[in-house]
Length: 242
Image (cartoon, rainbow, N blue to C red; front, side, top):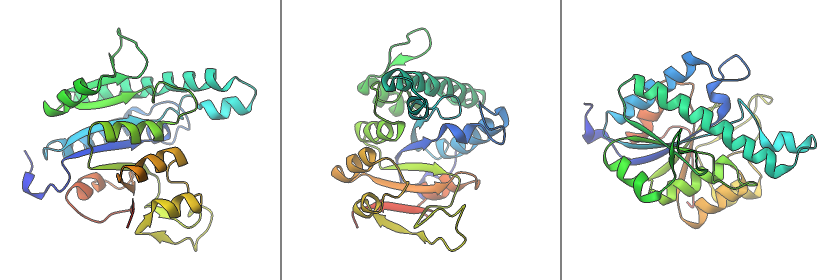
């Protein structure tokens, strides 16, 4: 097992977008990409860090987009929750192939596929060094998986939310479109809300602000970044009160 003395964070919640699993395909789940992410998680798990995950469903179905095309928003969101469950089961399979005990807990009952979400049971799994993947968002329409990540992180007493993205952190404007975009090393929750920065949705940011839960936005495409963050390196952008 890796050296535990270097670990600065004991419990983390990793928030992945569904798009992170699709690779260059543009849809669905890329087996190579999900295996790479699983290896990154295994490295951190071997350091003795308790890990929970929330994965979006945008690679399969995006409820908000469907609702803008005329579908009932609640129906579209429930379909999105099912998409997150597909991703959670795929990630569970990838992790267990590497020998990591994993449990999927769903906010919607699907007892043949996964456990129902029970906070105390989730805490017990983490104590037993199992990776816990929270599926189906909060179980309610109109709430995003970002909000689910904030809620679950607080319920399991996570030290931080690690928000995985395709860029190095939070910028003052889209770095994919503007070469002069400047990255923040640190930003407050209020500034994120005021400037409508695309970190997480406003409900998720407000929840973190009210409960002083730190968010780290980092680049998932750079190998070893999660390990560096839990070891105390200042990578990406930290969102907190000060």
